Length: 216
Image (tube, rainbow, N blue to C red):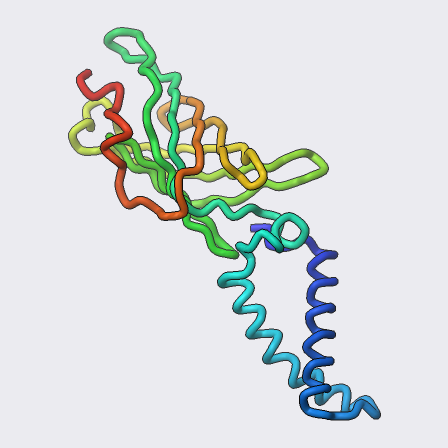
């Protein structure tokens, strides 16, 4: 992922180093009289910077104070709920099924993001996911490739397949994901999701409703 904006990050690190350097000099009462005394204080600053860096990459990058100006990608971990509208036609009736209820769970760290989508009949997991961000081109998207594994009970009409999905990231803070997908089964569709909660649900909630193809 594109983890930093280069110039703001350089300014941020320089400022952080300067603050740590000055703090150590004051606490230890060391005088800066030559290059060697400066290097000694700088050397003591490095472990503190490493600790702060670990804390930042583990926790602080999620904080809103660092979003946009320093961390270019949004914090979207959690469970999203919505619908899929496929273009697939039932070969028996020629009809397109109605909207399919769906949840998307996103696991996100500072350096990685993964996505799992669930309906009442299938689970699809990403094997590559990343943000596409470019303010000049007005791009703010999440894209990922996935493998979909339908339930055994629907194997006759729904086979395992691969696909790709691209979602527009909407809102600040982000509250909606909307986009399209296409699959190796030569099907396409649209997806619209609304943020539900930070908890990542482990299974499809029964109260979201059944799959529209359940009895077909």
